[in-house]
Image 1 (cartoon, rainbow, N blue to C red):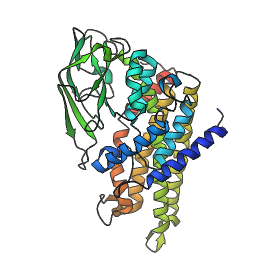
Image 2: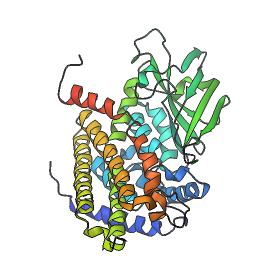
Image 3: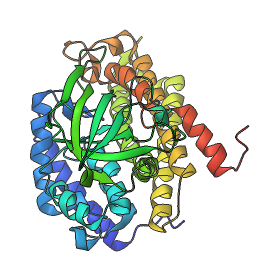
Image 4: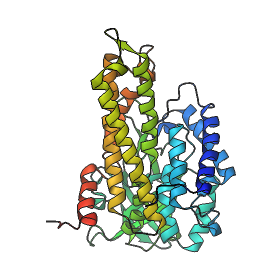
Length: 396
C-alpha cells in the first residue's frame, strides 16, 4: 500500500478542511459533536440539515458514486478523507445510514430503475434514511430476525418489530430486512426492502438512553404494504445485499478522527489543569496513557485507509473492515474511560453542570461508546469474521 496522497487528494482535503472549519463555527452553543449527536436535540438536527444541504450543493454526498448516477467517481480513499475531516471538525450533515450502508447495496444490487429513483434524492439531501435491521432477539445474530413479509398481489405485507433504530424520529425513509421464506436456512429466505417511514402501519417509538437522550427508537410494522419494486436485489437474497453495505459501514475512519479530536482536547485539559500542585501533563502515568491512546488512534487510521485502498482495488474485503471496526470501537471505550479517570471526579459530572470538564463530553462517551462495540456486529462477531474470512480458521 502506498501511504502517500496524490496532489489531487491533498487539494481535496484542504478544500474539505476549509469548509468544515467554517461550518464548525455555526454549531449550536451546546453542541459537543460525536457520533449520532445530530439526532439528540432539535437544534442538533437543524444544524445537520443545514450542513447537508450545503454538502449536496457541492456534490460531496456522492463523491465515490458513478458519474451516471450523479457521482464524481473519486473512490473509497477520497470518501475516507471526507469522513476523516468531517468527524474531526465535529460537523454533521452526512446521513451515515443512507450514504455508507444503503448506497453501496443499491449500487451493487439495485436495478437501474431503482438507482434512478432512489439515488438522486440522497445526493440532493432531500431525504434521511434509518436502518431497520436489529430486532429484540436478533442483534449481532441478525440472520435470526423474525419480521415477516408475505407476498400479496403487487406488494409484500410486513409485520414485526425493529429496535435500536438510530434517528428514526427524524428519518423520512427506512431500509429493512424481513423474512420472506420461513422454511429456508436462516441466512437465506431474507429480503431487503425500502420504504417511506410514514407509510401506513409504521409506528416509531422512542427508546431513550440511560442519560435521557433520544438517539434510538423502536419501529413497529403492522400490516405494512410495500410494493414489490421496493425490493433491492433478489427476493430471499437480502442477506447478501446487506453485507455490501455492512463492509463499508465497518471500514470508515470517522470514529478514529472524532476520537483524535477528543484526545487533543484531553491533552489540552492536562496541560492546563493542576492536581496536588502539579500539572496533569507532568504526571508520567497520565503521559503514558495519553501516548498509548495516540499510538492506537494512528494505527486505527492506517487500518481505515488500508480498507479503503483494498476497496478501491475492488478487492472483496471482509476481514479487514471487521478488524478496523473491532479495533476502533474498543479503542473508543478505552479513550472514554481514560478521560474520566484522568479528570477524576470532575469527569463524572454530566453536561450542563458548571463544574463538568469539557462540557461533560467524556462522561457521555462512557455511556455511549460501549454500545459501539455491539452495533454493526459485536466485537465477538468481528473476531469470528477475522478468524474465518481472514485467517481461514475452521468454524468448529
